[in-house]
Image 1 (cartoon, rainbow, N blue to C red):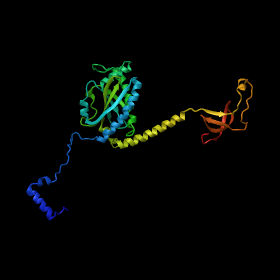
Image 2 (image 1 turned 180 degrees about the vertical axis):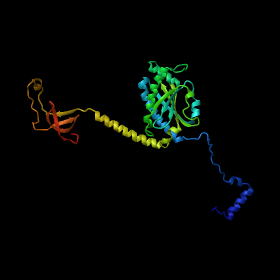
Image 3 (image 1 turned 30 degrees about the vertical axis):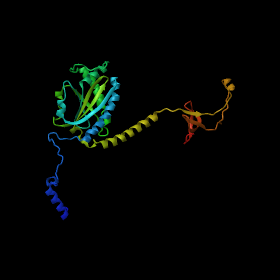
Image 4 (image 1 turned 45 degrees about the vertical axis):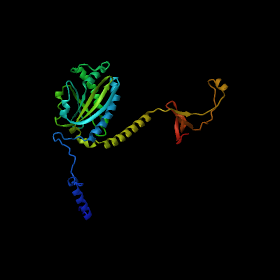
Length: 326
């Protein structure tokens, strides 16, 4: 129910209206809601949250590339994620030039393929490094030979295999490099109007520098799109890393070799007696035949044992455990 004005309020409004101090048109509420254009030909399927999470995933992927590729290229490799954006596949394919390096990756168990486009300058630099050169890109681009494509394919397989760990918080992938295309006309893997997410990374191999674009169609990751959020990524990634590190540490500790000593007894002799010791001399120790021996792990006394033999070797049999460090 609207408020009822008193007589004094009505008189004040009338006097303000007559004097021109009050404008009735300005008092009318204006319904100005922000209107955003919607393009039905290009529906936005990737939210900002999805794109932000993809950046986190491929920042992890970039770190793996930076530490793994130098093993094969014997050169310092720097990888940085530039940005991620949503675009139609037609826009992505129109930006491709000839020749081009397109790795078609089967994103199993998800249905469909993703595209890994590498700058041709990086391809020439990789070939040069693998063949013993300094990794210099060609000044003038040309078509890749079959031998060069075989060399590049080896590196692309390594890059594809590294996708498993960054994506494990979203899906357990088994990606496979199907083939490498060098002609952009044969790059029609999805419909032109299909929305895709394009992650752009800058790769520097020595003095050679270029971009790698990863094109992910929406239909490929639609089954796991709900998991593509920062909250799920952070929580899953933290628990996975903690569990992984714990297992690695435990496994490493179990393989560590530690010195174990069984002390038969102790004695004190003079330096003169020590210097004149001969084979067959007897040194009296402070333990008796029936006494248990102290067993040290490192410098910590952990067990008591009795002496014996096992398979023609001296041995001790553990009798008790010291719980505290003594």
